[in-house]
Amino acid sequence: MESLGVLLLHPMNAYLEQELDRRFRLIRLWDAPPGADARAAFLRANAAAIRAVVGNAGYNADAALIDALPALEIVASFSVGIDRVDLAKCRDRGIRVTNTPDVLTDDVADLAVGLAIAALRKIPQADRYVRAGLWKAKGDYTLTTRFSGKRVAILGLGRIGLAVAKRAEAFDCSISYHSRSQKPFPNYRFFTNVVDLAANCDVLIVACLLNAETHHIVSREVIHALGPEGVLINIGRGAHVDEPELVSALLEKRLGAAGLDVFEHEPFPPEQLLGLDNVVLVPHVGSDTEETCKAMADLVLQNLEAHALNKPLLTPVI
Image (tube, rainbow, N blue to C red):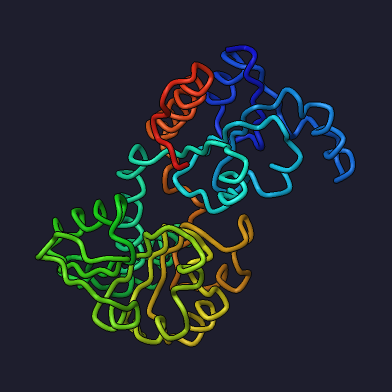
């Protein structure tokens, strides 16, 4: 399998990089000299050898990269989301695409519930209160509100959304959802549009895939429907949410709170969010546990090996 040239687009996982280097002919894109012209020359020099690309949620095979690699046969994404892969061009070229579903479901669902609890109970704020010496100086911290028993709405009842629902049920939360179609879960209330979903919940959790239909699906109208007591949790993609509208609503207290793992222009969250006390921010760490990252890396490696041996892929997208 040494003949399979693999272009790794960005440093993303030490174990994955080590195993790619051991099992294949690894080419690191960051070895290219700085500058667009130098990068283009680097790709031209290696194009004949590059039959596979490994990317992730932030760096993947766009149209320009695919056009620069005439020998490309497979794109293996170290992520579930493939919104940065030009799927249409891959289909036109007959390029196979894989991702890493299922193995990260539990960790992302755990984080969704963790963010909801952190936002409602103001855990990061209480931590800062203690560290700043304010407990001693000013006394007890302010009262917060519980997660247990809340009306939880899930935008996208796929693998991750369903895992979130199961966890929320353990907290005696009622579950509602919006998806492309109604699912066979009679205890979960289905809404045909997102505004009505937001109007009938306390916590709205975004867990759908990002595509043209779901871009900015959490709009001004949805945020308004969620209201000044509502909480928005996003563990999907940053572009699911109209960020200027979200910032405005949090500043003006038209939205109660938010817990965000993802942002539209990573790694640059809106500057105004950094000073707000009603938002919990984490740096896109939904699947970032030792266990899950190794499982994701193994899935990428297994898909590449299957392709090299002309065997069926484990997790084909196309």
